[in-house]
Length: 231
Figure 1 (cartoon, rainbow, N blue to C red):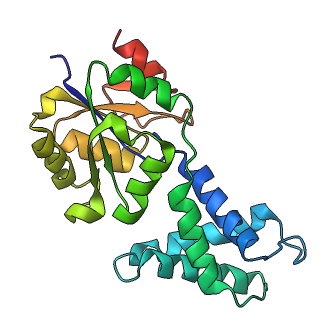
Figure 2: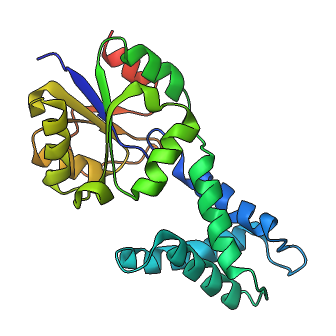
């Protein structure tokens, strides 16, 4: 059956999350006049420590606001690296502003979406905060391509929960057989899509080996490969 719609994951599928995050982490330090060089700390070391606390506290995202979480990341990282500052609250606000208003896209996103939009209804299913994901799509200048953008916070269910996929199908008034889902995460995207019998295209952006039991409908290493699938 010919697909009617192609639905995309957002982070590390359309937007390069790692580069977006790096830009925000280091940009906030610059905004608040905190020099890593003067403190004898490399960017790589700072980012590694920051990511450790990000992973540790992210599960508490339902307890804290996004800016409160970011302040925790910075406070913990700066304390571990023995960097003194009175700019913690400013760091959180600066990070959030940068992260939400500057976007780094994966290669060839505009070309791929432009071509696919001529023949398919396009949409996004993404985990995250509404206050981040929607502005980031706008910052990338790609919001006009999508008929629907479904954000986990808005509906109370996150990937791989089948509810978020069923919500998107309901909004688009489509059946699973009419949809292809494109994403980079086996745990969130592959599991979620296959639970509701949506065909899955794995964007294997880092050319990782797949477990033998994982069998996506398609595998691509570049987004441009999508255009080859639908010639």
